[in-house]
Length: 413
Image (tube, rainbow, N blue to C red):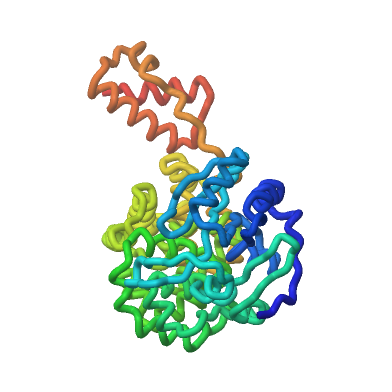
């Protein structure tokens, strides 16, 4: 075991609540430590979004202690030793030390224990097996500190065994490499084990696959990782179709060029969607949410209609029709699939139009046409549509005279 590093948790998110939790669990013959991602991220100065705690206390004892302290205990996975403890609206996942007794590639039967080393050795990657005592000491039983320093994502022990315990670890291997690796080739032994275990992907729920893929797509080194995923045949296995790696790389570049947050849905579209059928396939294979599928379909239907030839007025009309979000999706996808670079000024202007121009609300109402004798019903709808089309074509005029002329023209026989 190596305990070569010290961390100060005072500046962590929810530090006060974490301290109160440890006050309850780390005493009276039981030990509690921070484990997993929070420790890993703190060591490499990556933001911490959640804090997990492991303890020697059995789940029932965890519940008893936290309830006595006035905290809320939610038995989110109590059969596997996990209790979610909520302190001042901040949740902490607290899990009893355990070992796997039996696994089937999706689920595990566990036995609770008191060995920190055995608990560490059952985890997936060495960098995820670090634990932290409340005095700031980092405990490393698997070589995770050295691997983390090298940004080397490595399975603990035999990669084949780790993967057979949970086939989702195939996707996690690539996702963690994209997030924390150096951007080059992943661990050779781990990659070989992932390829050999690929049939196990068929056992996984589509929801679990979606969750890992969406995280991978926005990771810092997603592009080189996806190249490896494609070269190994795993991308085809997961997505069920052609991958457009150049378009994906360009999408990441153009998102960065205009300063928008990386979107996993937009990047998924760049990677795997050319026509509507592609969007529908991915929605089924990854069990996408309804709004995610709708975005993919919208991009598939309309990205080819976006070009520099639209001109300023054409772009504004498109923005008015689509709204800023759908406009940005189509514009960025069209740019990513064009021969232009991420530094192209004209494409930059097209893609950032929503930042400079807010489409106005159509100012004419049914009352404006009733005054001119247009009856309610189909005739009214036709008049409104004609007036709106003319208003957009004329550049969204707001003068009384221009609107009167548009109204008059719309009701002419």
